[in-house]
Length: 184
Image (cartoon, rainbow, N blue to C red; front, side):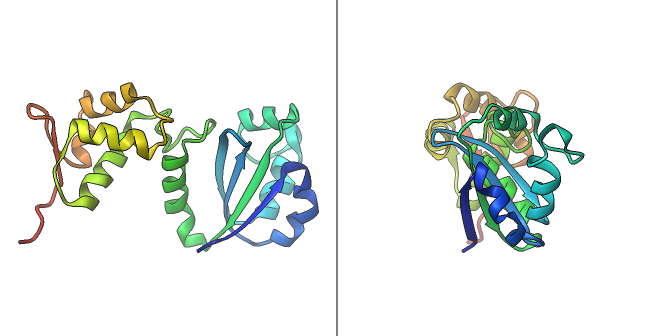
């Protein structure tokens, strides 16, 4: 669907010129962890003026990621080339699924609301009722066990009332329902 290029971080300087003007997502990872997912409208500009400059970068770059780069962690970068119009939606989707350690926005590790948004999307897309237990199990597997069931239970508890923005809830019965009733 999208063109992907994966290289070790040390190899980025040798390929970055070929990505001038290309837009998309970049994903920093090691074999065991996805560390960071970012978006850019120009890979070359983002890396030459950002990650390759390290502490001297004038652009915003993630401090936790910069620290790992400086420590010489065995990082790889995946460049996912895509049209500019698709970047934001894909970034949100990929962060929500991959749970990168250093992203905060849209990340279920950091935000109960991110889990609640995902619950709402699942309920609305399926157009059916879900029990809390069924959803808890589904999300545990969806996130590949990266999100503790305790966090999922917090999202379902809906203490701040945000889950109701994404789907209908019947807490007394432990049921989640789509906002719109399916057409008969």
